[in-house]
Length: 341
Image (cartoon, rainbow, N blue to C red; front, side, top):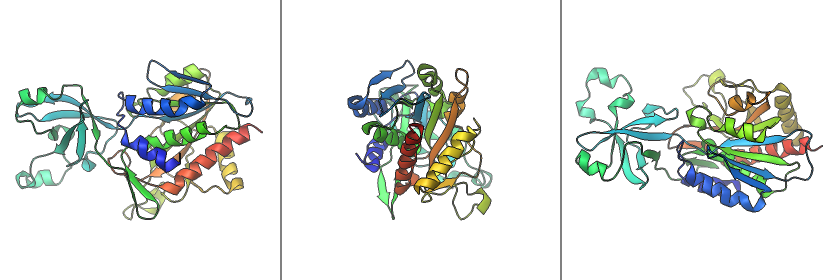
């Protein structure tokens, strides 16, 4: 399958942190025919060994996370409205009025707030707090809502996958279903070297799934395939634009969880230049990735990241540039080839 076809199917699935089963089942179905070994660990990580053309000098792991940001129900009001907490880093300014799929039945819901004509001048100046918001599922009482949902149920964004403009796509969960899609494409091929592929859980809640994967696989080299924050907007100063969709694979040198292995970073940059692969730096240090937890496992692991530049990340309308995905695939493939030389 093409990258864009895989991404479309993956983004349509729901996999809020801790509830990644739909995504996991899809990945197992796609990876199993090509896997030398496939296992699911107690954290729900999918670990796949794909035999390559030769055995590398060091054990190699590629990693992407299956989970997406979302919400969890924590209370139900007497009027039947749902109070909630965010699962993952979500900007509350972008969620007002958004559609949700609520609970295991995927009931339609809407993120709501009191009407604008009831907002005083002081409230108008600030973004509402999560505690001021609620989810409306059309229930008229707590008792009616309790027949439909329970405290602890998960809610995901209800968002279509849309191709628009000249090569752009819009969807929920591009972070990090694009990493999963690239890894599935590499599994379909015969990679240059034996490679472990780790599809991990609960990255959005603090890199919780990847330590288990790293301890199980015990890699010496780990390449993380991710999505990262694009800030190429007119209101952002030039030096803070970070990275941009349309300029190729993003090569960050660090984030708030890890300084990446400098030799790996240099190799990725050199390979991209030599192979004519479109790439760009990430010029702002922000966020965290599974590189941080993997790097600190066992006696230490060499780590680096290749990422897709995504606007409006952690929202129901993540925006990315489809041709960038092919550049990420080409660079990851070329790095495995380099390890096989």
